Image (cartoon, rainbow, N blue to C red; front, side, top):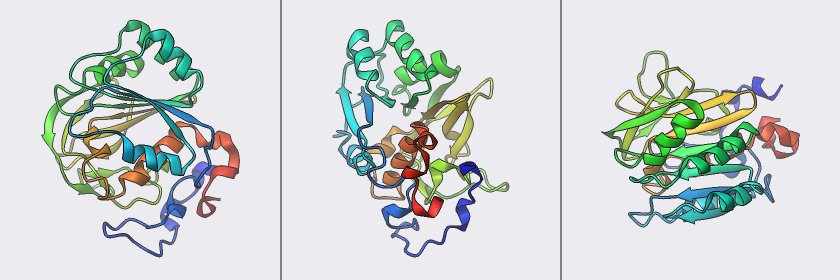
Length: 260
C-alpha cells in the first residue's frame, strides 16, 4: 500500500537555503490535486499582522480554497452550513474562548465523519479554544510558554528534538520551524502521536489517527506567520492539509510522481 513507501530514498537534487528540497514536486501531493476542496478556518487570533495570507497562498497551490472567519465565531448554524461544504477545519485559538458546546457538537460530528481537524494554539493564554476543542475531541490540552525560534530536523532515538521521521506530513522536509513562543502538549491518555518535538524536548505538534479520523494538535501557531520563509513551513502546511483530507481516498491521481 501507499504507506509502505520509503520517503527517505527520494533523491533530492536541489536544496533551498534552509536545507529542504526546493520545488513543489517534493510536496506530498501534486499541485492542483485538491481543486474544489475547501478548508474552513476559524482564526480567532489576528494580532501581529497575522492575516493567513501566506498559508492561504500555499494551500491554493494544491487546489484548496480557504473560507475564513476571523476574530469571532460564526453561529453554530452558520458553521454547520460552512462545514457541510468543507473537507477540513482549522481552528486558530485566541486568549478568550469563542466556541460554545453547540459549536463543539457540530465540529465533533464533522470530525467523526472522517473530515480532518487542525487545532492551533500557542503560548498561554493563547490556547483557549485549542484546549476547549482538544478536550472535547480527543482528551488533550496544551499549556506553558516555551521559547522556541529554531529550525528542527528529524528526531533520532538519541535526540530529544525534531520531527518524526517517515511520516506523510514530513515528506520532502529536512527541517521545520518550531514557532516562537510555544505550548507543550499534555496528553494524559496517550491518544496522540508526537510529530514535532521542540528544542526544549517538549511535544509541540502531535497527530491523532484512528478509524479514518485525523486531527493535528499544535502548540505553535506563530509558525503560520513568523519566519514563514524559514525551513519549509509552506510545504509543512500543504502536506498537513493533504494528510488531513485523507489524500489516499483520492487515489494515485493526487500523489507526486516521486511517491507513486
